[in-house]
Amino acid sequence: MCLIWGIPYLLIKVAVHDLSPVTLVFFRTLIGALMLMPLAAMRGNLKPLLPHWRAIVIYTVVEVALPWFLLSDAETRLSSSLTGLLIAAVPFVGVILGRLTGARDRFDSRRLFGLVVGFIGVAALVGFNVSARDFGAVGEVGLVTLGYAIGPMIIARRLSDVPALGVVAVSLALPAVAYAPLGLTHLPSTFPSLSVVVSVVLLGVVCTAIAFLVFFALIAEVGNVRATTITYVNPAVALALGVVLLGEPFTLGAVVGFGLILVGLFLATRRGSASQSLRGPAGDREMGYDPIAGDGAVAAPSPHESL
Image 1 (cartoon, rainbow, N blue to C red):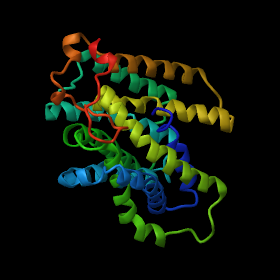
Image 2 (image 1 turned 60 degrees about the horizontal axis):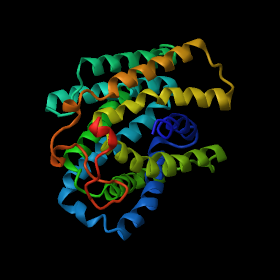
Image 3 (image 1 turned 90 degrees about the vertical axis):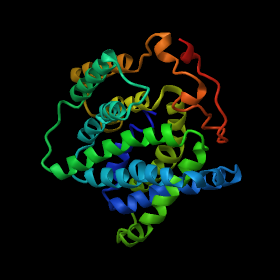
Image 4 (image 1 turned 135 degrees about the vertical axis):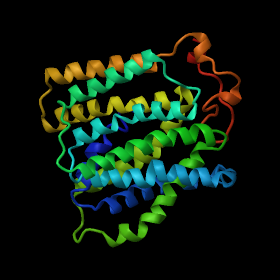
């Protein structure tokens, strides 16, 4: 997930060079929906969603429809490194929301310290590039972090007993339909460059359809708050792509920053004692089903759950 959701910043930056944000979101969600909707229908994963339609609509809005537009629009004015730094605030928002809503998966002082260390690492990684002339774009990314923190909470608390494949497919199909009028009317006057086309395809196939299935599996394994800490490694992935593909320098600050990120991840995601790790019966677990099977079956506990 760190790799899959570390490359969208670069791909979005390339895509919005020729495409408007609404058109980009339309094609990204359309590609993902065309891949997953037939599979979900064949597996019978759509009908079980009907009783949960309200939660699915809210999840779609806060996790896909609004964040992807806001992020695409913000990257027309912000650098990808600054965007990655701001998105790294997702775990902080998740912790705050978890405490406010009484989540079982709370962070102790060690985990909170790990989050702080990780955030400092992200800042060092991007050279403390926190200046932004367009505060509106910064605000847009701030709303994205809020949506990205709320989305996993909805999955964990309201949609843990429905097929993940169906949820993902519908959450992509709904924005595709909603953005179709604007997306199609804002097409560029000339055909986009090959790099833009490839970026859109990669965003739809890898960073959307495949990514969501993997992310659901990650939430099932480690919980919704710890799952969001993948955002710490995203800037490192962006940096690595810059070094390999664009010949950007690999500095000492990058080494130190990435080291702090790894330390922060270890402290923030490490489980405590056995009594802290075991959260009661299966019904109390945040996610207790196999998202790949897509049938809502309860998954076997991970070996890490007994440590």
